[in-house]
Image (cartoon, rainbow, N blue to C red):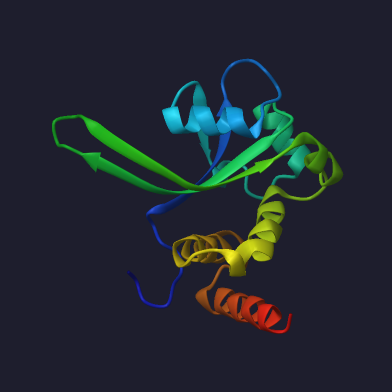
Length: 159
């Protein structure tokens, strides 16, 4: 891994869209379809980063939003065939009621708040992915993310 960074190139972040014409889906529907790779579209987070919740809902034509942090591998076999593997380890479901309350917030801030709230309760693998998100999409530098993590650890110790 590169020195002085939490940004791991293998970690990718996606928004998900069930491609069935319906505007609303449950957590369980996403879980089933994502695990089976059926009727679902992965949208790179870069395509929605900075948009307000209501803009993301309009863009994806959905009332709920699912975002995942995943390890992503792509292999080119040289003969024109490419194999992709997406490991959906961490995914976040935001239901319609919650999104309506937060529709003026940006989607990256919504995810940031959730990750900060849950950070200390996660295993080390998940924390690494969260730190990657913080550095890549929120802080812009290793030093700022390191300060954030230190703040989260201190808050946890003071409880």
